[in-house]
Image (cartoon, rainbow, N blue to C red; front, side):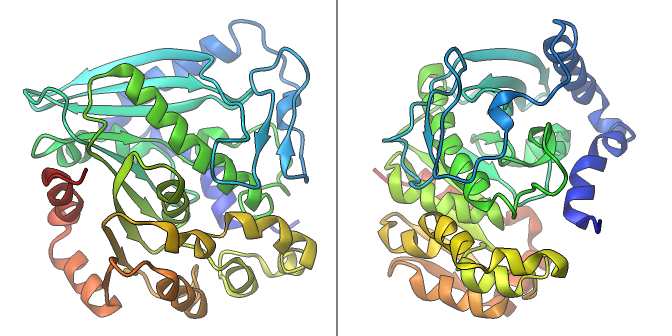
Length: 348
């Protein structure tokens, strides 16, 4: 069987992460927390019941499980019944300018999420930005002191996690089931996760929930578009290289292995993914938006990029590719200034 490089990167990330000196302290905390919760209590190593492959639009688990029902056919939580069932603190790091917490939070059976909450010092109830990077990126960047300081600079809170079926959330599944083969689940679940994270932040009470922004890259940008379309708590949207327009994306994306592509362009597969296509939701976004394609067409082919750009709402600030690339190469340390400036203003 041919293995997709993205899936291999996801599975191989942890050993190499341990070799990165700045990450060791928090990484060991992650491993200790995972061991205590999933091995020390005698959990079976058999796949969890809640992780069995599901091809329908809804996921229903046996009685007593943490997830009674989840509807992947809608980005909204309206027809899903997710509730926070467990919040565990995996440790905190502190620098002169920020504190960083790693939280294990659960609202879906068999799918605990590692949530990184970075708070600037001397800024009570700061604005908050959610950061969601593309598949198959993991959470290692949120364990880097310099990166955390970069996010908190200027008095902003930052919250990071990974999408469903990515990084530490990819387990108890056969290798043939991965982010793209389970696209409706991966995207639909993660859009719900964004809203559940916002629910959690509201309960914490230490960030300003009237000034919430979201940055998304690649698949994370696709998720961000739909989350902003259904959740008015998100006030600003910053998008880099968003995926979308699934019929064209699945037919031409370089991320899709050729030996699997035929199954992804069948009518029944496209029918399942249509409700979670950001192209269908982008026009419903009414908040400030910045959209730019920094990378060359490939993972998101040019035809899909054009469809996404044409679906953008009128208020969107679209940065032409050559300008976006030049700005990114020359001003990386100012990349998040735009979304921070938007939140500094009164966006309510």
